[in-house]
Image 1: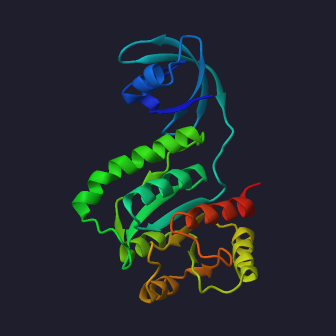
Image 2: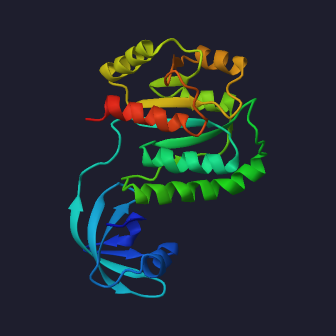
Length: 248
């Protein structure tokens, strides 16, 4: 079943009104008809409504609510991916897959070895596209929330941002063995952490000064195995492991 997101203001009694770009998506992309079922999620509270399409017009689609679903598809911890800025197409891939895998938030980070260099103005223009990709991926994977893609940050800003989280993880090729990484993740679960930040290096990897800064901020260094992963593969691997450890 298809899924869309609407604001709470679009929900009234037993009806949901779909407006904006989603109308074209329903009518011309999905080619949905009256009487077909769809799933609609409220952006504000994450509630999922099972609906039947009642009316289709050029600027609005009216749906009748049949049921409200309380099942959550979210990870039991909020995972923020601090992604070292890669080439633009790779960042879009990371955003899409990280959302599908359950990331709560994605933060692009300009690092010393980032191949691409964005100034603030250029990054701000791209942010709208990044968030549109996140919303599309959230819809496809039937998430209860749309993860935010934040504005581009420096490493210093990202470390400050992560300071409010319960734990910070740093996948790094010079980490101790896999057993130590298992111990770290299991301890996090046993301690009941609710939020984790994961720092991913760009194509060129982390600079030693960046690793030192993250360690000083309390980051636990983990390994993702004996193989060196690409920057766009690493967040998928981390999220898969966190899903395995934390999800019931």
